[in-house]
Length: 305
Image 1 (cartoon, rainbow, N blue to C red):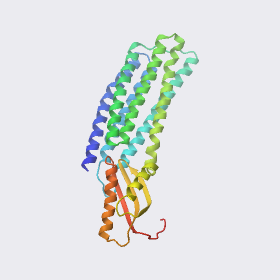
Image 2: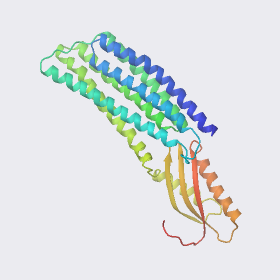
Image 3: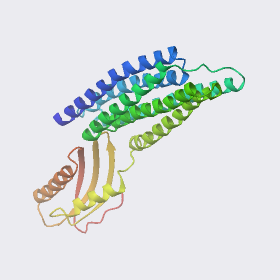
């Protein structure tokens, strides 16, 4: 349990860092967009503001997911972390939709003859600062997420990178609107639309594995094959079948039927099951491995249920 608490502590630490960076960036970008006359920068600032919500989601749900099993959650609280990942993805998609709507609306108004204001240098500088800040935050958060094997933290890292992509698009749009002729000011809202597409793609990519986990999708085929090899090469194991796997936050849940020599004692069979469990846990030291090993005598006939 100490391992889970340490993991939650690291996740909260990196998320709090992101929280305060986002606080400064979101306020700064929205003000820069307002005073710098850039719709793309305001949209970029709103994107950073959405990071507040996702940071809070991670802080709250990572703490819950680290709690031990109880009567109502006998496999632990790992799915809370998965649910947090899903919420982050939904937030990304909502932000992408809002930015897309704003950009399309401005382009339509421009086509109808409304003049788009020229952005100023304050918006340009804010975009540059945002790119470097968010890329650093992405690298830092992703490294921690990989270290502690947290999908929610990794998803939050990609939210930071999507903000960096957003700022790159914003920088290009602002630059074109500033340094080219008046007709090119439409690049500002076009940039916001392009950014929204990147954000949407990121959200969908992160959402798919979260949905699979919530729906108890099996672990990857190569991982299951690896588990089969570990089990069948354990001393005393004659054969195995009925392997079932799923993921619960940072936990791997493994159910398997193991066949042993029918002449050995119950104690010997139990020791074989313990060896299988120990080897599986050793193979995945950064994950919590929960096993349910059903021992059967060799050549025992059993239905497939």
